[in-house]
Length: 267
Image 1 (cartoon, rainbow, N blue to C red):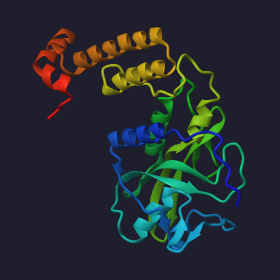
Image 2: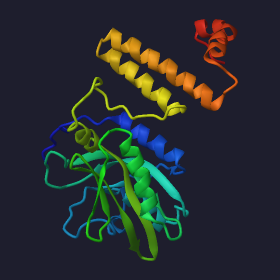
Image 3: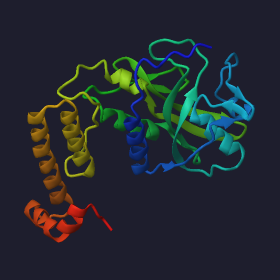
């Protein structure tokens, strides 16, 4: 089998962002098996699908199969879970389909789960990266897809198999998300930077990443502008979370920790 390189690099920062985002919404992160048996592949694999077989089992086409294996073994109590795994697919290659990629997978196997909750969470995640509202498209009883710029970035639905019932969905697939976002004209920044909420940690992270992106572009004026925005984000965070502390108070605190800061020590 020919192993062509991915046309777009996997942005692992998006993968980390997704794991953190869904954990903040109450999904429990798990590490899952990447090699499973045929019984775990059966509920999701088309009848004519080829599998990547190893001496221990089959490489997963999605971590949904990993979750299924855990449910079949009695190792996945009812709950909402998030994980990340490589996905291996023996399918026709095109711009958006590859033999392997990385995907954050979501599952809800609680009693009577609803995919609308998961769909809303995913819309919230994708919406942080683009000013274009992601679209949803129904797949004729097979679930719902989320599209950005006409590119499918996630699929969501409910499955039942051998007495088990669960909601499945994509948290973030790479490089698919990066490819979809690349179809939107770029602004000042080269990187895909998720928008944060003013007064929250996420806004501080947004401004810090924009500062880092300006440094990568070797644009000192933009970097100074982003530093100014970063200070504004910190001040808004203080106002929302520590209203009795001003930015000036925060700046004077460095006198207490100056020696440790200069020595690079934190303990």
